[in-house]
Figure 1 (cartoon, one colour):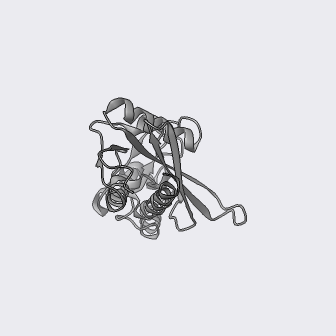
Figure 2 (tube, rainbow, N blue to C red):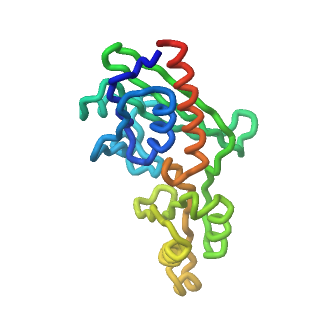
Length: 221
């Protein structure tokens, strides 16, 4: 039974998550799946720490889905939220826990899908040379995986959406101060970009969480 026939399904994202979520839903069900125009999910929290996340993981996903329902004429909303934490037994290993949440407005129902993986490139480092910065970027899979450049871990001066090696090296050189760094050494803080559209490894975990959501929906409806 196709319980989403003739339903409008909005995906609350601005970071390309529809590439996996919409594809899987279209394979499993009929219904119109779309992404809202001008929907800023950064307002609900960012991995780049520009905005603090609103509440815990499920509360943030619920807020995004609810906002998308208010913004559109959709019957159903889907939102995703990720969380990276140290492995409980191996502290230097990170765990990616992804939630994909569906809200059915008519049925007043929430259904969750989860996936957990240790396959993640989540990493941070402070470097003082271009060579060390390049080594880190290579290790985490740049440029396929994004890298964020900051003055410090808490700095508001940030380079993101760096797409090429030339742009990366230019950002590092600028932060380090060029030849002046030999006189007054500086440091640069680097971190992996965990936004979904900049992190194919994370996107795979979101895909698995979506599959879990679809399995749960088929059992429930």
